[in-house]
Amino acid sequence: MNVLVVPVTKPGDMNFILGHSHFIKTVEDLYEAIVQTVPGMKFGIGFCEASGPTLVRYIGNDEELIHLARTNAMALGAGHSFIIFMKEGFPLNILNTIKNVPATAPAVGTGFDSTVANVLDFFAGFSISDAANTVKIEIFSVEALN
Image 1 (cartoon, rainbow, N blue to C red):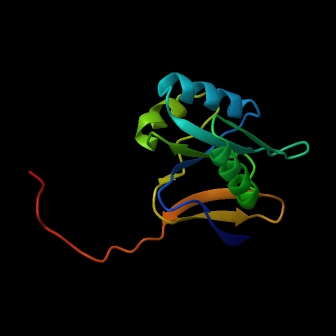
Image 2 (image 1 turned 90 degrees about the horizontal axis):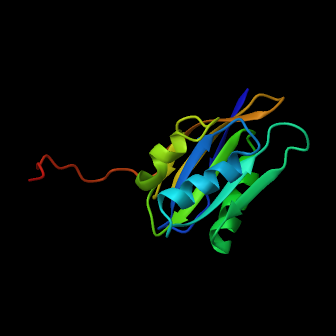
């Protein structure tokens, strides 16, 4: 088994969610869940199939975000995974909704900063194990927020 480090390619100020799912129809279910939860949110979803022709399915309501989702899903290449890019909303706005979509697992990662996904290559297929923020903390503070 090899571990591939795959960067999530996006503009610096773009939020995303990376997750797992098991059902081809998930991409449509995620779309409906997001639209019903945050109607004004702009987003794009990319989903990697794990059987049959192993297509990347994509959908959304913003062409730029759909392109980002499709491109990143192709780069990740891990079946049963999805990535959602968003504007005019935050992962926090839709995480609980996404967790309640049938056949989805809790999110592997969410991000705003530079992020990489660790993809496991089992020589028979790929799986995302986790995501890591690549920004190193430089300043430490012990001040409490009031």
